[in-house]
Image (cartoon, rainbow, N blue to C red; front, top):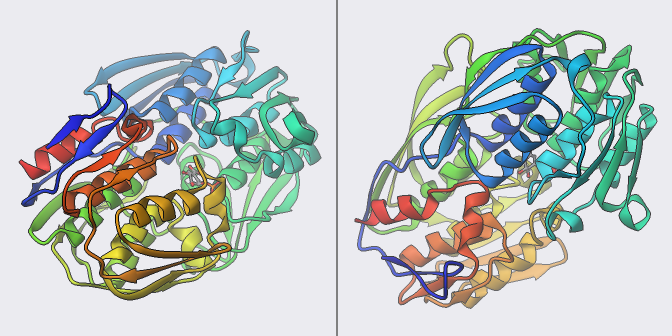
Length: 453
Ligand code: S3P
């Protein structure tokens, strides 16, 4: 049972006797942001079906509206929303009158910066306390070298961020310093307004939704090495000046949200959960593969690529059953591939036989909270054996968890991780500021109730 503890902010979770069913899942957060922004750039009417209705995606919808596109919510169910976006096109967008509020969303901040770099407006991007502590130098540097003017607090390191864009930018050939799909996407989005070819090189392939979605809107985006070779370093190139066409599409289910239930099902002794229509893009499915490597009993039924007119992402139904897990070792490449799932994988590691090591996880400190510190503190409070050494994490298991008070630091992924832990912990687990789950998964606690019923 899940009940409010102190006011609306905290939740207490008691262990579940069994877990069964099919949780409703949010539309992919990364794809939802991109679909809204690309709709703003494409003259005409776009439909974004099944966008995640978390606070992050709402922030991007608000920014798109502030730029002069009409954004209508045509259907909503408390978890997902269908948007109709009607845009006057790049030349018809207008300078926003106020500050653009990205709230908790780093993706809104970084992706919007790329879009705004190519529009001749003065814009200020701001957000909540967490967002104001997240680095922006990584986007200021490449976007400046393309000819946009960007300024930020603390010597251009922290939001609020000012972007003074221009309609014609310079193309660049840029190698990202940290694996970041947000930085890559910001540069490619700015590259749409650059003269010549913009190339972004990354040492580790990050999620490629922007590239796929630009292609489905008529933009030629080249990949080297060619599509068939997976993993490793990759370079993406596009030619500036082409216009995007509007598109009707359905957003796949978010694999990062699905990961919470995959772990819940694997670590709970009496569980069988089915997750329908999950996006299993090769650049997003690392957590599924890592869990299988740990011994999770996950059955995957491919649904083929989304139908024509959709975003062209591979989908699958996933069923997970109670599993005996064993430890694994993750290096920096695997951390980058599963960057948003590391907190919930850490919980899985507490129930795995042996010592799981996660090396080179420093980027986790730059997320909605310092996730290395947050996950170590929360899991340790629950009785897990967690050691942090610099940017490396080691977790030794299996350890029976015991309910305790956990702190989320207002981070949605920590809140959901500790809630899943509460399903197997003896006694009561409390989660402070649990409502932060609504950043990416508004019905998370409702689903949790249903699965244990
Ligand atoms: C995202 C990229 C990742 C991820 C974030 C969403 C995206 O961030 O952590 O939740 O949609 O491009 P970085 O690119 O900064 O690693």
